[in-house]
Length: 213
Ligand SMILES: Nc1nc2c(c(=O)[nH]1)N[C@H]1C(S)=C(S)[C@@H](COP(=O)(O)O)O[C@H]1N2
Ligand SMILES: [Mo]
Image (cartoon, rainbow, N blue to C red; front, side):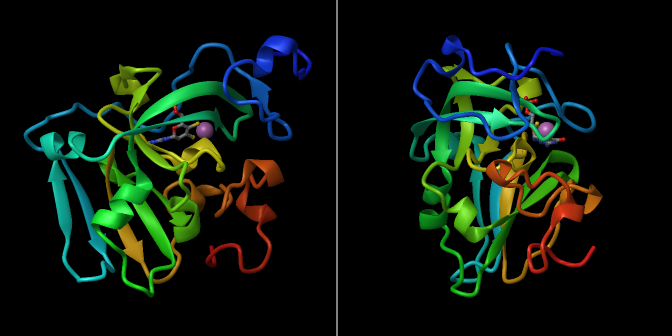
């Protein structure tokens, strides 16, 4: 905090060699950032739901045991918070977003998804962003289960977008045939949120980058 932005030798060690997006600085440790309380996890009540415009018009749900049996992969990726800290080089383990798209295919008309979390928190993504082979519903970080405050039992990580695009305490995905703003996107954050283009705030949106506010 307060130090000049620098890319010191140690800063990029590890598996990610990518530079930091503009305006970001490296945060040591892992701060907790979210709106509202940390939800209590109740395994018997938890389910992950895919709904909206599915290819067969059916909803799909997985209970916690079933969800933990879905394909598992790891992705090394940084978290870029729009408030300008970045947490670099984490190894996320969990269910690739692609696996969800394969197991519960969207209808051809789907262009966007809304990712839903506890307490109605949500974030919208273009289908193409969600379909990235690096997008992951993380259950683990660096080989350990996520802690409650970091999103246990699952959080979305979309490495090429700002971290608010990855809800903690995720509960499902809605397939949409038109774009709609999620929680932070309605409250001043950019509809797309590409950190490499510094798409932080909705007032920066170019025409066509988001639905009317
Ligand atoms: N459910 C939920 N998920 C959320 C948020 C939130 O407010 N609620 N905040 C986002 C923001 S702005 C950031 S920077 C990251 C922070 O994740 P961390 O607390 O694990 O560092 O979570 C994201 N996911
Ligand atoms: Mo954030």
